[in-house]
Every structure is written in structure tokens, then in C-alpha cells.
Image 1 (cartoon, rainbow, N blue to C red):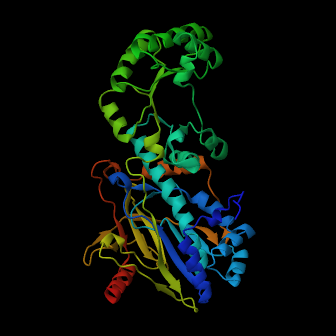
Image 2: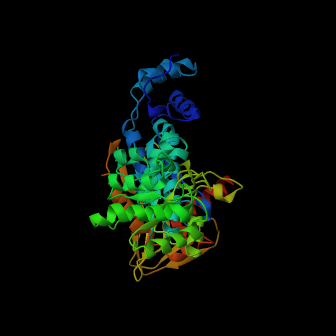
Image 3: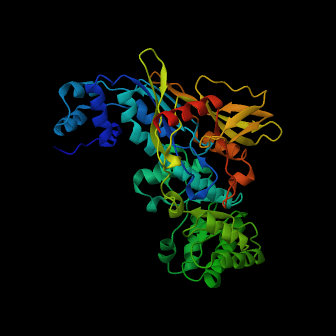
Length: 482
């Protein structure tokens, strides 16, 4: 078979999803309504929370879900599927409902980031792509948020395209990093496609192309007088790099009245070099010159640098951000939680395991977040059965999902439902926010978390508890099937 020239992402599925879809079709079960949840079991890097991302790309995929004749021919070549099923795929579209937590929301283990209600074959075939979108971008957004918080308000730029795992790793990775809080990216196409502000100045090769470092700096200042950020560590940072930068600033920028400029450190003892460079710049009257740093940084190194008194105004963070190198798997899963009878009755389903963390929470659910009325801070998340409502004018008892006895009472709180309708009967029912709106929402929502939840080391465990009704359903199924 010839290689297909165009890429149809509807074919990006694990093959067992197609064999199951065919099996449902053979049994007349393809249209039975099912409910699936996308959730994760633990926060990467031992953190206290994650950041939900990737919904926009999932929406684009769902809207274009189809199989063309090349796809049908490929599936026919596997000699597993009969023509009536292949004809069914010719007319395949998503007709179900989807609810999701908006991008940028801080989220916690065990709660549904995406809920799919759809005919069995449709819900099964979107599993891989739904997980791919949510897992990858939530991972990078979460890592970026850690890096940004470590930087303590200083500018952070994403510099990782050349070390990313493939094209999407770079392009949508930069998008996810922006949601998490970085101020921009080195990846130009992410700016073109998504509006992630792209920026950059020079590499060491620029300096090496000239007969002298000073000539390289002066020329760059002349070409880009309003964007003069000079890389000063090609040769000797303190003996020639910073002095040559100061000379170029004096001769090109100062006569024009330009005071905005910068230097970048990319190697060596950055804490020491930044402090010494700051002294040289200030002594020369360039107090407004910023110092940025790059070179295999992450949140731990940034925190260490600042604790050592490094004089750094901005950080360029590359491979350890775009690959989430310290823990490069988010671990989200896609699990069946309910099916519908012909009369519309919803029957909860559970997955049981000797590993308690792998026991699912069954049923079609609602997800609430409770905020203290006195502080505005998030105090707990609450999973309830879909037909329950929360009366936040009264104290409420919530139940630990994994314990047979542990419960607590919350009071003086405001409840907010976290999931929003995204698709209804296969039609988009959600106005996708702009990327700056998502980023601002993320920052706003992270600010509602207590500092104890946000700390890097041994963060406070945030409660995600169940309603009494849902707790009874879960433990009833455990007793019945255990």
C-alpha cells in the first residue's frame, strides 16, 4: 500500500480501540450510550496540584473526526473488518456530549478533567487522542507553572523547541507552557499559530562570525537598538563579554537616549557571574540593563540561584521544561464509569484493583470546588452524582473516597461547578477562550490555592472527596464485585 500523503488524525488510535468498536458493531452495541472519564492518579514531581490543558486541540480533533477512503482501504488491508463495519466508518461522526474542566484550571488526582457521554464505538475510538492532548499539555503546563513560581515574578521564556520530542512537542508544548505562566517562547510558529509571544536575539555563532566580540555587539545594537540583548559568554564573560557589551551600549544606545537593553549568561557559575556582571553594569551607569540566564534550568536550579543571591531578571528555560525532564509522563487515564440502559437509566461501572489508587470512582458525576467565603481560597473539591446539587448555604459532610469511615464537614463556603459543557449532540457548545484569557484564568485560579498546597516540598494534600450518595454507590459496587 502506498504511503498516505495527508495526515488524518482520526487514525491516531490504539488499534484495540478499532477492534473493540468492530466488536460492539458485530454485537449491535455500537450505539449503546457510555460514560468515560479522563483523570490522573498523581501529580508529577510530587507537586500539590496540576494544570489542566489541551482541551482546544481535543475540540479541533472531535470536530474533524472522520475516516476517508484511504483510511478505509488501510483498515480493509488488515483482514479483520467486514464491509458493513467499514461502511459504518464511512459515515462516522461524533454525536455525543463532552464536559471538561476549562484549560488553566488547577486540578487534582482522581477528578474528571474530561467526561465523555457517547455511543460506545465513538467514545472508544477517541480514547487515545483525548489522552494524548490532555496528558501532554497538562504535563507541560504543570511544569511551566512550577518554573514560573520558582522565578518569583521574574520573566520566564520557553527555550526548548530544539530539544522537544517532535514537532507537536515543540509547538503545542510552547502553548501549554504559556498557559502555565511563561511570558513567551523562542518557537516562532507557536506565535504564528497560537499567539504565544516569540522572542530571541543571538547565539554564540553571531559573535564568532565577526573579527571581534565588540564588533559583533556594536553591529547588533545598530541593527536592533530597541532589542539589544547581548550574549556575553562566548569567550570570557567578565574580562571581555560584559565590558564589550557596556562599550557597545555606550557608543550606540546612549547617544540615542535608549536605556532598555540586556545581557544573557548561558554558561559558567551563573550565580557568581550575574552578581559580578551587575556590579560592572551599575558602575558603568547601566542600572537599567537586565540580566537573563539560560543553560539547562528548571524550577529547582532557579530556586537555588535565587537563594544564592543571583542577580537575574529573566530566565530562559529549555529542555527541562519542554520535555518535563524530571517526570516526563502525566499518567492520565480514560476509564468507563457508566452505561445507559435502553430506558435511559444510568448504570455505574467500577474498575477494582488491589492497588487502591487504581480503583475508579464510578458513575456520571459532577465536580465542584468549594471556596471559603472568608478567604476566597479553595478548601476542597467535591464529586457528586450527576443529579445532585450543592446547597452552599448549609454545612456539608464530605467523604474520603478511599476510606470506609473518614469524613469531614465543610461550612461557610461557596460552591462552583468546575466542568463546562463542550459538545452537545456532537455540536460544539463552548466558546473557546483566547490563549491570553486562559493564561490569565490559570494565574487567577492558582492564586486561590493556599501556599501550603503550592509549596514544592511535601505539599499539603488537597481534599477531593465524595458526596454521601456517590460514596454509597462506590462502596456498594466494591462490596458487590470485590
